[in-house]
Amino acid sequence: MSGSTQQTRRVILASLIGTSLEWYDFFLYTTAATLVFPQLFFPSLDPFNATLASLTTNAVAFVARPLGGIVFGHFGDRAGRKTVLVVTLLVMGISTFLIGVLPGYASVGVAAPILLALLRFVQGLGLGGEWGGAVIMSLEHGDGRRRGFNASWPQVGVPAGYVLATGLLTILSLVQSDEAFLSWGWRVPFLLSGALVFVGLWVRLKVSESPLFAEVEQQGGKSRLPLLEVLRTHPRALLSAFTARIGVDVAFYTFTAYIIVYITGQLKLDRSVALNAVLIGSALQLVLIPLFGSLSDRIGRRPVYFAGVVAAAVWVFAFFPLLDTKSFPLIALAAVVALITHALMYGPQAAFIAELFSTRLRYSGASMGYQVAGIVGGALAPIIAVQLFQTYQSTVAVSVYVVIALAITAVGLAIAPETRDLDLTETAPASKQPGPVGPFA
Image 1 (spheres, rainbow, N blue to C red):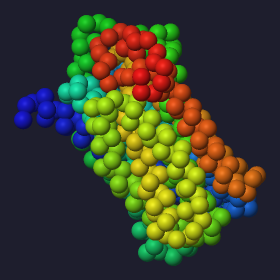
Image 2 (spheres, rainbow, N blue to C red; image 1 turned 120 degrees about the vertical axis):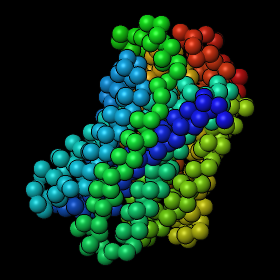
Image 3 (tube, rainbow, N blue to C red; image 1 turned 90 degrees about the vertical axis):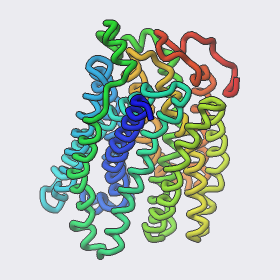
Image 4 (cartoon, one colour; image 1 turned 135 degrees about the vertical axis):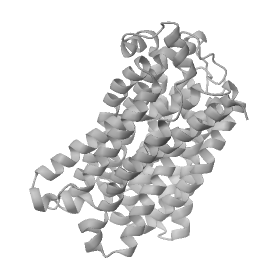
């Protein structure tokens, strides 16, 4: 095995472990926001408004993520990818640990939800800088013909983090009484993050800097103000990255976060039903995301991505009727197929977005396009879904909302070039080709 291949595998492993820990931290909060925080931090509100308030604090992280993408993207394009990835891991780990020791409303009153929202904001800053660096490090190392496969591994951190976070919370909720779980059991996975972050740091400190960034640095080609230059030179790439992500986020958080609210609140089933169904689908994604990333290396990013858009748009109309059966096998089927459609989009997504931008601006450009879309997509999706069902008393309204978001993603794919064969050393790779007329052009 060549040194280059070994280094590429080391970088992919470091990115996978780091992003898994970051998403573990992130999903701990998302899951706890539906199961624990309404009672612990918003006890004075009725159940509906307490859940809505808790989901709103969850959305704070999505507002922070673009800011994290801007700040860490700037330093990633100026100081290098490796240094920034170490910092983002520390930011996320420390803030998650502090959530684990945060007193509830009964102890400190209104200060509790304020501090909770503040720490969630800090989590968002860390994750906003993490995604771009992990994807780009994986993309810029190794064989250019395997960029889709390599860049998909940080994406695997999402289901891996979900499995770790939700699995731990599920086990604790099963072996403890509701009183013990609400009192202290939910805190254990948050506190564990403080120890896990050292594992991620140890791995990340052993990898080398991106060779493409090192070449730009050696040639004196670094941008002084990367974000401003991205806005000036890559406007279409930013628009494509932004729109291509929205539907993926809305579908994902409907399939993984709103499902918990719907099953426990509307169907009156135990929370473990929803958690276990999503866990099964997430475990399957561990294999499917790199598989579809690799497929995009062979047939192109957009065909695989677009197939996922169509599949998710169709399946969302079967998703809720299957949940309504209250049968666990059918609920699991709903979640598993839903997350397969998400994997089709998520596998090629990282390479597709990163390849739209030149090396000297890639961290800033990819992070900005990806993270801003998170506000419109993931941050609002569970809140809008709750409100739509409350207003119309029908899941059809929620399904239509998901389809509209996926249609926006299809437009984002249509206005971008196929990025699989783009030269990453070009000044503005995506601007070198004329706009295509459709997803498979």
